[in-house]
Length: 340
Image (cartoon, rainbow, N blue to C red; front, side, top):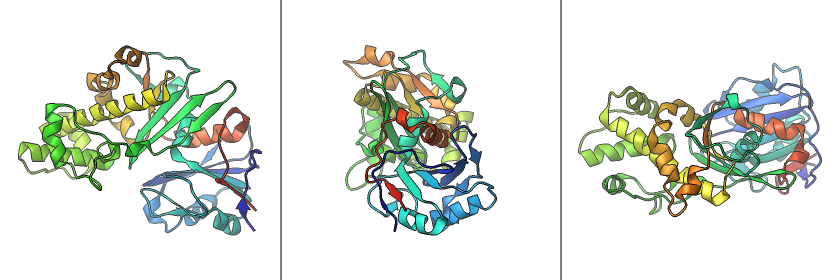
């Protein structure tokens, strides 16, 4: 009978690795510690009733069958039934062990996986914003605007990197400028408040755009986040341009807050689907200006580097790094690992 296991022993190879987001699920398999990952096609979560169905399809054409699995998912990991924040899937490790032939399952937060990825990220997989270089052995933070807004930390100790999960995307965010005060009344609150995720994610782009249009007294004519960013980057729609400028400004403010919380002298990394697509906007002055505008610590903030992660499979890479050498990381497994 599968049961919770508090062991920190390495998971047995081969290991199925999964990054489960609100929209997409990505899987790979790691045959052993020296092998390259075998990547499977990206799965649309809406096309499958359960994660088990998606895994079965992914493994159909694989010559390697996993003995264990490490899954990173969007949301807090609690109990034997783990719902995703922005998706209808529920991860049930005991069912996976019973039905998929897997003997050991570890489930962690998706931004722990993103934090693991930035522990050993190469220059080719990051695009630096601004001039600060930072201390490469110091603590770091990662933010990921995509379907939602994920936040994680990577704290450096004497011998290990410790990934810190959280739900930082749901912190409060408020207006600061006169223009913000014009726009804010048109943002829709959730239970009386505006969280960072309400404005810094895909639907956040839409929320800002609709609020800008309402403040300007015009009807919005752009429907999807991609339409807004495409028109903004092309300079063909005034409200879309302002929306994107506000988006990167608000992202900069929150990224700066998170940098101070973790004292992330090693840098703040922007992951997820959106930053790679709006890199030209992030490279303009507004993002760094908002990031550094943290009086009385503006001078400190100027020394903290910011990067965009340009590896679309960063979370899978982070999980593979952990799978190969778990002793290098202080990853908590209590209450999150199940064995047959």
